[in-house]
Length: 375
Ligand code: NDP
Ligand code: GDR
Image (cartoon, rainbow, N blue to C red; front, side, top):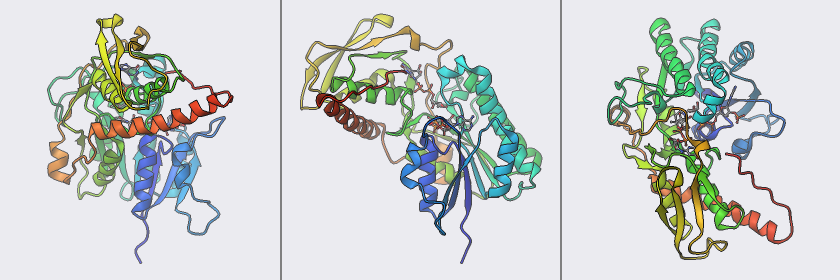
Protein backbone atom coordinates (compact mmCIF):
# COMPACT_ATOMS: atom_id res chain seq x y z
CA UNK A 1 0.00 0.00 0.00
CA UNK A 2 1.37 3.46 -0.91
CA UNK A 3 1.67 5.91 1.94
CA UNK A 4 -0.81 8.77 2.06
CA UNK A 5 0.69 12.12 1.09
CA UNK A 6 0.94 14.74 3.81
CA UNK A 7 -0.07 18.36 3.17
CA UNK A 8 0.29 21.40 5.40
CA UNK A 9 -1.94 24.43 4.73
CA UNK A 10 -1.41 27.89 6.22
CA UNK A 11 -4.65 29.88 6.16
CA UNK A 12 -6.75 26.70 6.42
CA UNK A 13 -9.52 28.60 8.22
CA UNK A 14 -9.93 30.99 5.26
CA UNK A 15 -11.99 30.64 2.10
CA UNK A 16 -9.38 28.86 -0.04
CA UNK A 17 -7.90 26.86 2.82
CA UNK A 18 -11.25 25.26 3.55
CA UNK A 19 -11.93 24.26 -0.07
CA UNK A 20 -8.36 23.00 -0.52
CA UNK A 21 -8.53 20.92 2.67
CA UNK A 22 -11.76 19.33 1.40
CA UNK A 23 -10.16 18.53 -1.95
CA UNK A 24 -7.02 17.01 -0.42
CA UNK A 25 -9.01 14.89 2.03
CA UNK A 26 -11.07 13.58 -0.91
CA UNK A 27 -7.78 12.67 -2.60
CA UNK A 28 -6.67 10.65 0.42
CA UNK A 29 -4.15 13.13 1.87
CA UNK A 30 -3.39 13.58 5.53
CA UNK A 31 -4.14 17.26 5.98
CA UNK A 32 -2.53 19.51 8.59
CA UNK A 33 -3.50 23.14 8.96
CA UNK A 34 -2.30 26.15 10.91
CA UNK A 35 -4.93 28.14 12.77
CA UNK A 36 -4.49 31.31 14.75
CA UNK A 37 -5.38 31.60 18.37
CA UNK A 38 -8.47 33.83 18.65
CA UNK A 39 -10.70 34.81 21.56
CA UNK A 40 -13.63 33.01 19.95
CA UNK A 41 -13.97 30.04 17.60
CA UNK A 42 -12.55 30.75 14.13
CA UNK A 43 -12.83 27.35 12.46
CA UNK A 44 -16.38 27.68 11.06
CA UNK A 45 -15.23 27.06 7.48
CA UNK A 46 -13.60 23.74 8.35
CA UNK A 47 -15.86 22.48 11.14
CA UNK A 48 -17.69 20.19 8.70
CA UNK A 49 -14.45 18.32 7.88
CA UNK A 50 -13.08 18.28 11.41
CA UNK A 51 -12.06 14.82 12.58
CA UNK A 52 -11.61 13.87 16.22
CA UNK A 53 -7.82 13.65 16.68
CA UNK A 54 -8.39 10.82 19.17
CA UNK A 55 -9.62 8.61 16.34
CA UNK A 56 -6.98 6.21 15.10
CA UNK A 57 -7.47 7.05 11.42
CA UNK A 58 -7.91 10.80 11.74
CA UNK A 59 -6.52 12.51 8.64
CA UNK A 60 -7.16 16.12 9.66
CA UNK A 61 -5.16 18.00 12.24
CA UNK A 62 -4.99 21.66 13.25
CA UNK A 63 -1.96 23.29 14.88
CA UNK A 64 -1.88 26.67 16.58
CA UNK A 65 0.49 29.00 14.79
CA UNK A 66 1.14 32.32 13.14
CA UNK A 67 3.08 33.41 10.08
CA UNK A 68 4.82 36.04 12.19
CA UNK A 69 6.45 33.39 14.40
CA UNK A 70 9.49 31.62 12.91
CA UNK A 71 10.12 29.16 15.72
CA UNK A 72 6.49 28.10 15.75
CA UNK A 73 6.49 27.53 11.97
CA UNK A 74 9.75 25.59 12.08
CA UNK A 75 8.47 23.38 14.89
CA UNK A 76 5.24 22.59 13.01
CA UNK A 77 7.14 21.79 9.80
CA UNK A 78 9.54 19.55 11.73
CA UNK A 79 6.63 17.65 13.24
CA UNK A 80 4.52 17.41 10.07
CA UNK A 81 7.29 16.82 7.46
CA UNK A 82 4.88 17.77 4.66
CA UNK A 83 5.14 16.54 1.08
CA UNK A 84 3.23 19.67 0.03
CA UNK A 85 3.03 23.05 1.75
CA UNK A 86 0.36 25.49 0.62
CA UNK A 87 0.99 29.04 1.88
CA UNK A 88 -2.51 30.54 1.79
CA UNK A 89 -2.30 32.45 5.07
CA UNK A 90 -2.24 36.24 4.73
CA UNK A 91 -3.69 39.55 5.80
CA UNK A 92 -5.59 39.38 2.53
CA UNK A 93 -7.69 42.56 2.51
CA UNK A 94 -6.30 45.24 0.19
CA UNK A 95 -8.08 48.20 1.88
CA UNK A 96 -7.02 47.00 5.34
CA UNK A 97 -3.39 46.83 4.18
CA UNK A 98 -3.40 50.65 3.91
CA UNK A 99 -4.43 50.75 7.60
CA UNK A 100 -1.92 48.07 8.72
CA UNK A 101 0.94 48.16 6.22
CA UNK A 102 3.66 46.93 8.56
CA UNK A 103 1.64 43.98 9.85
CA UNK A 104 0.68 43.10 6.28
CA UNK A 105 4.34 43.11 5.23
CA UNK A 106 5.32 41.00 8.21
CA UNK A 107 2.73 38.31 7.57
CA UNK A 108 2.42 38.33 3.77
CA UNK A 109 6.06 38.97 2.80
CA UNK A 110 8.18 37.86 5.76
CA UNK A 111 5.80 35.01 6.58
CA UNK A 112 6.56 33.50 3.19
CA UNK A 113 10.30 33.85 3.78
CA UNK A 114 9.95 32.24 7.22
CA UNK A 115 8.31 29.16 5.68
CA UNK A 116 10.91 28.85 2.92
CA UNK A 117 13.72 29.23 5.46
CA UNK A 118 12.12 26.62 7.71
CA UNK A 119 12.10 24.18 4.78
CA UNK A 120 15.78 24.90 4.17
CA UNK A 121 16.75 24.82 7.84
CA UNK A 122 15.13 21.41 8.25
CA UNK A 123 16.72 20.02 5.08
CA UNK A 124 13.32 19.49 3.44
CA UNK A 125 14.25 21.18 0.12
CA UNK A 126 13.94 17.96 -1.85
CA UNK A 127 10.88 16.65 0.00
CA UNK A 128 8.50 19.57 0.48
CA UNK A 129 6.82 21.14 -2.55
CA UNK A 130 5.80 24.74 -1.92
CA UNK A 131 2.80 26.67 -3.26
CA UNK A 132 2.68 30.46 -2.83
CA UNK A 133 -0.68 32.26 -3.04
CA UNK A 134 0.33 35.07 -5.37
CA UNK A 135 -2.18 37.53 -6.73
CA UNK A 136 -3.39 39.55 -9.69
CA UNK A 137 -2.94 42.59 -7.42
CA UNK A 138 0.74 42.38 -8.47
CA UNK A 139 -0.33 43.83 -11.84
CA UNK A 140 -2.02 46.80 -10.11
CA UNK A 141 -1.66 49.63 -12.57
CA UNK A 142 -1.89 47.32 -15.55
CA UNK A 143 0.82 47.41 -18.21
CA UNK A 144 -0.87 45.01 -20.64
CA UNK A 145 -4.39 43.68 -21.30
CA UNK A 146 -5.04 40.83 -20.58
CA UNK A 147 -2.43 40.09 -17.92
CA UNK A 148 -0.31 36.96 -18.25
CA UNK A 149 2.76 35.44 -16.56
CA UNK A 150 5.14 37.79 -18.42
CA UNK A 151 3.21 41.03 -17.80
CA UNK A 152 5.28 43.47 -15.69
CA UNK A 153 4.11 44.12 -12.13
CA UNK A 154 3.08 47.51 -10.71
CA UNK A 155 1.65 46.91 -7.22
CA UNK A 156 -0.76 49.56 -5.87
CA UNK A 157 -1.15 48.73 -2.16
CA UNK A 158 0.93 47.63 0.83
CA UNK A 159 -0.75 44.23 0.36
CA UNK A 160 0.38 43.97 -3.26
CA UNK A 161 3.91 45.16 -2.45
CA UNK A 162 4.19 42.55 0.31
CA UNK A 163 2.89 39.87 -2.07
CA UNK A 164 5.46 40.98 -4.63
CA UNK A 165 8.25 40.19 -2.17
CA UNK A 166 6.63 36.80 -1.53
CA UNK A 167 6.40 36.14 -5.27
CA UNK A 168 10.08 36.85 -5.88
CA UNK A 169 11.40 35.08 -2.79
CA UNK A 170 9.55 31.98 -3.96
CA UNK A 171 11.16 32.26 -7.39
CA UNK A 172 14.52 32.93 -5.73
CA UNK A 173 14.41 29.83 -3.49
CA UNK A 174 13.47 27.74 -6.54
CA UNK A 175 16.47 29.10 -8.47
CA UNK A 176 18.93 29.20 -5.58
CA UNK A 177 18.19 25.92 -3.82
CA UNK A 178 16.45 23.86 -6.50
CA UNK A 179 13.26 23.76 -4.45
CA UNK A 180 9.96 22.77 -6.03
CA UNK A 181 8.34 26.15 -5.38
CA UNK A 182 5.53 27.70 -7.45
CA UNK A 183 3.48 30.86 -7.63
CA UNK A 184 -0.18 30.71 -8.53
CA UNK A 185 -1.04 34.23 -9.71
CA UNK A 186 -4.71 34.04 -8.90
CA UNK A 187 -7.30 36.56 -10.00
CA UNK A 188 -10.24 37.27 -7.69
CA UNK A 189 -12.14 34.17 -6.68
CA UNK A 190 -15.22 34.05 -4.55
CA UNK A 191 -17.78 31.67 -3.05
CA UNK A 192 -20.41 31.52 -0.31
CA UNK A 193 -17.40 31.18 2.05
CA UNK A 194 -15.86 34.49 0.93
CA UNK A 195 -15.06 36.88 3.78
CA UNK A 196 -17.97 39.27 4.39
CA UNK A 197 -15.95 42.43 3.67
CA UNK A 198 -14.81 41.55 0.12
CA UNK A 199 -16.95 43.20 -2.49
CA UNK A 200 -18.92 40.24 -3.89
CA UNK A 201 -19.91 38.86 -0.51
CA UNK A 202 -20.60 42.32 0.86
CA UNK A 203 -23.07 42.74 -2.01
CA UNK A 204 -24.80 39.34 -1.82
CA UNK A 205 -25.06 39.44 1.97
CA UNK A 206 -25.98 43.12 2.13
CA UNK A 207 -28.74 42.87 -0.47
CA UNK A 208 -30.15 39.70 1.11
CA UNK A 209 -30.28 41.51 4.46
CA UNK A 210 -32.02 44.50 2.86
CA UNK A 211 -34.52 42.25 1.06
CA UNK A 212 -35.45 40.71 4.42
CA UNK A 213 -35.64 44.03 6.29
CA UNK A 214 -32.50 43.49 8.40
CA UNK A 215 -30.65 46.49 6.91
CA UNK A 216 -31.75 49.52 4.88
CA UNK A 217 -28.96 50.39 2.48
CA UNK A 218 -25.73 49.03 1.02
CA UNK A 219 -22.85 51.54 1.05
CA UNK A 220 -20.30 50.94 -1.71
CA UNK A 221 -16.94 52.26 -2.88
CA UNK A 222 -15.80 52.33 -6.51
CA UNK A 223 -18.55 50.61 -8.51
CA UNK A 224 -16.66 51.11 -11.80
CA UNK A 225 -13.87 48.71 -10.76
CA UNK A 226 -13.54 45.80 -13.18
CA UNK A 227 -12.59 42.33 -11.97
CA UNK A 228 -12.08 38.85 -13.44
CA UNK A 229 -14.06 36.76 -10.92
CA UNK A 230 -13.90 32.97 -10.67
CA UNK A 231 -15.08 30.37 -8.15
CA UNK A 232 -12.72 29.37 -5.31
CA UNK A 233 -13.52 25.68 -5.83
CA UNK A 234 -12.14 25.80 -9.38
CA UNK A 235 -9.08 27.73 -8.24
CA UNK A 236 -7.99 25.40 -5.39
CA UNK A 237 -8.08 22.49 -7.87
CA UNK A 238 -5.48 24.39 -9.83
CA UNK A 239 -3.37 25.00 -6.72
CA UNK A 240 -3.11 21.25 -6.22
CA UNK A 241 -2.41 20.62 -9.93
CA UNK A 242 0.53 23.05 -9.82
CA UNK A 243 2.29 20.87 -7.25
CA UNK A 244 1.83 17.65 -9.28
CA UNK A 245 3.99 18.60 -12.30
CA UNK A 246 7.48 17.35 -13.21
CA UNK A 247 8.92 20.87 -13.01
CA UNK A 248 7.86 23.78 -10.82
CA UNK A 249 6.44 26.80 -12.65
CA UNK A 250 4.29 29.91 -12.13
CA UNK A 251 0.77 30.20 -13.55
CA UNK A 252 -1.93 32.82 -14.00
CA UNK A 253 -5.32 31.49 -12.90
CA UNK A 254 -8.27 33.48 -14.21
CA UNK A 255 -11.43 33.14 -16.29
CA UNK A 256 -10.50 35.61 -19.05
CA UNK A 257 -13.73 37.62 -18.60
CA UNK A 258 -14.23 40.81 -16.57
CA UNK A 259 -17.25 42.64 -15.19
CA UNK A 260 -17.83 45.74 -13.08
CA UNK A 261 -18.82 45.85 -9.44
CA UNK A 262 -22.06 47.52 -10.60
CA UNK A 263 -22.80 44.51 -12.83
CA UNK A 264 -22.33 42.18 -9.85
CA UNK A 265 -24.83 44.27 -7.89
CA UNK A 266 -27.32 44.03 -10.79
CA UNK A 267 -27.03 40.21 -10.95
CA UNK A 268 -27.30 39.83 -7.18
CA UNK A 269 -30.41 41.99 -7.07
CA UNK A 270 -31.96 40.01 -9.95
CA UNK A 271 -31.55 36.79 -7.94
CA UNK A 272 -33.68 38.46 -5.26
CA UNK A 273 -36.34 39.38 -7.82
CA UNK A 274 -35.24 43.02 -7.93
CA UNK A 275 -34.67 45.16 -10.99
CA UNK A 276 -32.52 48.18 -10.16
CA UNK A 277 -32.10 51.58 -11.83
CA UNK A 278 -28.74 53.32 -11.27
CA UNK A 279 -28.93 57.12 -11.15
CA UNK A 280 -26.39 59.89 -10.54
CA UNK A 281 -22.63 59.88 -10.92
CA UNK A 282 -19.58 59.41 -8.68
CA UNK A 283 -20.27 59.87 -4.97
CA UNK A 284 -23.91 60.74 -5.78
CA UNK A 285 -24.70 57.48 -7.54
CA UNK A 286 -27.62 55.50 -6.12
CA UNK A 287 -29.54 52.37 -7.07
CA UNK A 288 -33.35 52.43 -6.83
CA UNK A 289 -35.73 49.48 -6.88
CA UNK A 290 -37.51 49.64 -10.25
CA UNK A 291 -39.56 46.46 -10.07
CA UNK A 292 -40.05 43.49 -7.75
CA UNK A 293 -41.00 39.93 -8.63
CA UNK A 294 -41.35 36.80 -6.50
CA UNK A 295 -41.27 36.62 -2.70
CA UNK A 296 -37.62 37.05 -1.86
CA UNK A 297 -37.73 40.73 -0.93
CA UNK A 298 -40.81 41.22 1.27
CA UNK A 299 -39.28 44.25 3.01
CA UNK A 300 -38.91 46.34 -0.16
CA UNK A 301 -41.09 48.64 -2.26
CA UNK A 302 -40.61 50.07 -5.73
CA UNK A 303 -38.75 53.39 -5.40
CA UNK A 304 -36.64 52.38 -2.37
CA UNK A 305 -33.01 53.50 -2.58
CA UNK A 306 -30.95 50.47 -1.57
CA UNK A 307 -27.40 51.30 -2.77
CA UNK A 308 -25.42 54.48 -2.12
CA UNK A 309 -21.76 55.43 -2.43
CA UNK A 310 -19.66 56.12 0.66
CA UNK A 311 -16.20 57.56 -0.15
CA UNK A 312 -14.95 55.79 2.99
CA UNK A 313 -14.64 52.72 0.78
CA UNK A 314 -12.46 54.41 -1.85
CA UNK A 315 -8.83 53.30 -1.69
CA UNK A 316 -5.81 55.65 -1.57
CA UNK A 317 -4.60 53.98 -4.79
CA UNK A 318 -7.12 51.88 -6.71
CA UNK A 319 -6.71 48.92 -9.06
CA UNK A 320 -9.30 49.89 -11.66
CA UNK A 321 -9.18 46.90 -13.97
CA UNK A 322 -7.93 43.31 -13.95
CA UNK A 323 -8.35 40.72 -16.66
CA UNK A 324 -6.35 37.50 -16.71
CA UNK A 325 -5.13 35.33 -19.56
CA UNK A 326 -5.15 31.72 -18.32
CA UNK A 327 -3.81 30.23 -21.62
CA UNK A 328 -0.68 28.79 -20.02
CA UNK A 329 -2.65 26.95 -17.33
CA UNK A 330 -5.00 25.61 -19.99
CA UNK A 331 -2.23 24.49 -22.33
CA UNK A 332 0.22 23.05 -19.79
CA UNK A 333 -2.10 21.73 -17.10
CA UNK A 334 -5.38 21.24 -18.95
CA UNK A 335 -7.15 23.47 -16.41
CA UNK A 336 -10.37 25.29 -17.21
CA UNK A 337 -12.81 26.83 -14.77
CA UNK A 338 -16.11 24.95 -14.53
CA UNK A 339 -18.29 27.45 -12.66
CA UNK A 340 -19.29 30.74 -14.32
CA UNK A 341 -19.42 34.01 -12.43
CA UNK A 342 -23.19 34.13 -12.94
CA UNK A 343 -23.62 30.63 -11.42
CA UNK A 344 -21.36 31.64 -8.56
CA UNK A 345 -23.37 34.81 -7.92
CA UNK A 346 -26.60 32.76 -7.80
CA UNK A 347 -25.03 30.34 -5.30
CA UNK A 348 -23.80 33.19 -3.09
CA UNK A 349 -27.16 34.99 -3.08
CA UNK A 350 -29.05 31.75 -2.31
CA UNK A 351 -26.72 31.08 0.62
CA UNK A 352 -26.99 34.61 2.04
CA UNK A 353 -30.76 34.73 1.51
CA UNK A 354 -31.18 31.52 3.50
CA UNK A 355 -29.23 33.01 6.39
CA UNK A 356 -31.07 36.35 6.17
CA UNK A 357 -34.44 34.55 6.22
CA UNK A 358 -33.41 32.69 9.37
CA UNK A 359 -32.46 35.98 11.04
CA UNK A 360 -35.67 37.66 9.89
CA UNK A 361 -37.72 34.80 11.32
CA UNK A 362 -35.96 35.08 14.67
CA UNK A 363 -36.58 38.82 14.70
CA UNK A 364 -40.26 38.32 13.85
CA UNK A 365 -40.56 36.03 16.84
CA UNK A 366 -39.15 38.58 19.24
CA UNK A 367 -35.53 37.42 19.45
CA UNK A 368 -32.75 40.01 19.35
CA UNK A 369 -30.81 39.75 16.09
CA UNK A 370 -27.75 41.89 15.58
CA UNK A 371 -26.36 41.68 12.07
CA UNK A 372 -22.93 43.20 11.84
CA UNK A 373 -22.68 45.79 9.11
CA UNK A 374 -19.00 46.55 9.68
CA UNK A 375 -17.34 46.36 6.30
P1 NDP B 1 -8.91 34.68 3.56
O1 NDP B 1 -8.76 36.07 4.04
O2 NDP B 1 -10.27 34.06 3.48
O3 NDP B 1 -8.03 33.70 4.48
C1 NDP B 1 -6.77 34.09 4.97
C2 NDP B 1 -6.27 33.04 5.94
O4 NDP B 1 -5.01 33.47 6.47
C3 NDP B 1 -7.19 32.82 7.15
O5 NDP B 1 -7.15 31.47 7.50
C4 NDP B 1 -6.52 33.66 8.22
O6 NDP B 1 -6.81 33.24 9.52
C5 NDP B 1 -5.07 33.39 7.88
N1 NDP B 1 -4.14 34.35 8.47
C6 NDP B 1 -4.25 35.70 8.48
N2 NDP B 1 -3.22 36.24 9.15
C7 NDP B 1 -2.45 35.20 9.56
C8 NDP B 1 -1.26 35.11 10.33
N3 NDP B 1 -0.67 36.18 10.84
N4 NDP B 1 -0.74 33.88 10.57
C9 NDP B 1 -1.35 32.77 10.09
N5 NDP B 1 -2.49 32.80 9.37
C10 NDP B 1 -3.03 34.00 9.12
O7 NDP B 1 -8.17 34.59 2.15
P2 NDP B 1 -8.51 33.67 0.87
O8 NDP B 1 -8.78 32.30 1.33
O9 NDP B 1 -9.48 34.38 0.01
O10 NDP B 1 -7.11 33.73 0.11
C11 NDP B 1 -6.09 32.78 0.37
C12 NDP B 1 -4.75 33.35 -0.06
O11 NDP B 1 -4.78 33.66 -1.44
C13 NDP B 1 -4.35 34.64 0.64
O12 NDP B 1 -2.95 34.61 0.80
C14 NDP B 1 -4.74 35.73 -0.35
O13 NDP B 1 -3.94 36.86 -0.15
C15 NDP B 1 -4.46 35.02 -1.65
N6 NDP B 1 -5.27 35.44 -2.79
C16 NDP B 1 -6.63 35.43 -2.71
C17 NDP B 1 -7.41 35.72 -3.80
C18 NDP B 1 -8.89 35.73 -3.74
O14 NDP B 1 -9.50 36.31 -4.66
N7 NDP B 1 -9.51 35.10 -2.76
C19 NDP B 1 -6.78 36.04 -5.11
C20 NDP B 1 -5.34 36.00 -5.09
C21 NDP B 1 -4.62 35.69 -3.97
P3 NDP B 1 -8.18 33.72 10.28
O15 NDP B 1 -9.27 32.82 9.74
O16 NDP B 1 -7.86 33.48 11.71
O17 NDP B 1 -8.38 35.16 9.93
P1 GDR C 1 -9.60 43.04 -4.19
O1 GDR C 1 -11.05 42.56 -3.71
O2 GDR C 1 -9.23 44.34 -3.60
O3 GDR C 1 -9.60 42.92 -5.68
O4 GDR C 1 -8.68 41.93 -3.52
P2 GDR C 1 -12.30 43.33 -3.11
O5 GDR C 1 -13.44 42.41 -3.28
O6 GDR C 1 -12.03 43.87 -1.74
O7 GDR C 1 -12.45 44.60 -4.09
C1 GDR C 1 -12.68 44.45 -5.48
C2 GDR C 1 -12.97 45.81 -6.09
O8 GDR C 1 -14.22 46.27 -5.62
C3 GDR C 1 -14.09 47.63 -5.25
N1 GDR C 1 -15.11 48.00 -4.26
C4 GDR C 1 -15.17 47.56 -3.00
N2 GDR C 1 -14.43 46.63 -2.34
C5 GDR C 1 -14.76 46.36 -1.05
N3 GDR C 1 -14.06 45.42 -0.38
N4 GDR C 1 -15.82 46.99 -0.43
C6 GDR C 1 -16.58 47.92 -1.06
O9 GDR C 1 -17.50 48.48 -0.49
C7 GDR C 1 -16.26 48.20 -2.42
N5 GDR C 1 -16.81 49.01 -3.35
C8 GDR C 1 -16.10 48.88 -4.47
C9 GDR C 1 -12.67 47.74 -4.73
O10 GDR C 1 -12.25 49.11 -4.69
C10 GDR C 1 -11.94 46.88 -5.73
O11 GDR C 1 -11.62 47.63 -6.87
C11 GDR C 1 -9.07 40.57 -3.49
C12 GDR C 1 -8.46 39.92 -2.24
O12 GDR C 1 -8.97 38.61 -2.12
C13 GDR C 1 -6.95 39.85 -2.36
O13 GDR C 1 -6.43 39.07 -1.28
C14 GDR C 1 -6.59 39.18 -3.68
O14 GDR C 1 -5.19 39.14 -3.82
C15 GDR C 1 -7.23 39.93 -4.85
O15 GDR C 1 -8.63 39.93 -4.67
C16 GDR C 1 -6.93 39.24 -6.19
